[in-house]
Length: 193
Image (tube, rainbow, N blue to C red):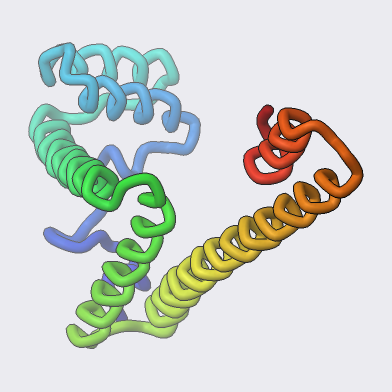
């Protein structure tokens, strides 16, 4: 049985006292996490307000040590997210105007690699394998969708260019003024006059 199957998180084992708060405390947890992310208030001030919010709900507050472990864990998660955003911003900058398509492809490859590394580690239950299969299937589908969309856009541009050429030729034969033909061609190929 894996950590996911047993209800334990990876690492030290048991869920934290914050993770085990009743569902009614979810808005307060979200508030505290958001304050941690913003980094405008000191951690002990957030804890004091968080415990006051819990007390208003009739729930026992969390200890300073539990809060510190939780806030450190969240800080590490935020740091990884920020690093991920920075990496994606760099990829966007390097890849240029069709970056969303390219980023989808890069992320798909990264997900495939991550799934492979997790599988190499073994010790996965059936639920874990099913979740990984869904992730992998979705990554592959996104890549396929990206390729299909790019191909459809290229095909459409080629058909529009051919149509614009045909309209210009037929228009010239019919005696339509060149500036009117230029406007029609522009509308066909770019959607703008």
